[in-house]
Amino acid sequence: MAIKLEDYLAKLPAEERAEVEASMARAVEREASLRQLREARHRSQVEMAATLKTTQAAVSRLERRTDVYVSTLRKYVEAMGGTLVISVQFDDQPPVKLSQFGE
Image (cartoon, rainbow, N blue to C red; front, top):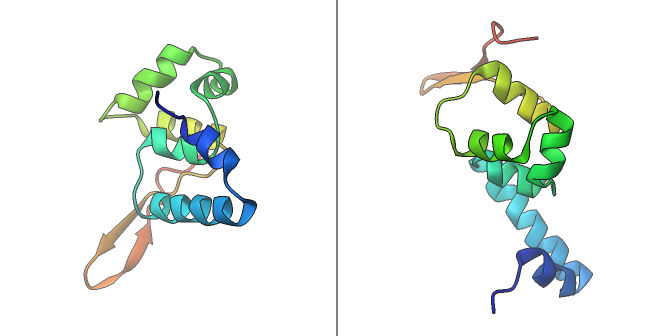
């Protein structure tokens, strides 16, 4: 029988659980899908749907899409308590934040 990650982590000693969660957070910092971000923030699709005033099925579809409106992505990120920042990076200079995608 499969064991859910949450159940496995709950049984770990606090120090080891903290190490695993820190490792997961570092992985998310590099690159993550919307689903991975949501899970790292300990949110369910149902919770996200309630915050976004939509359905769980709509959240599931959004997480699987490869092409999303910037406004939709911003709302999703804000529903998790984050702020969407879009930047451009070139090899010969530091990242540049794009300002046209603000509120």
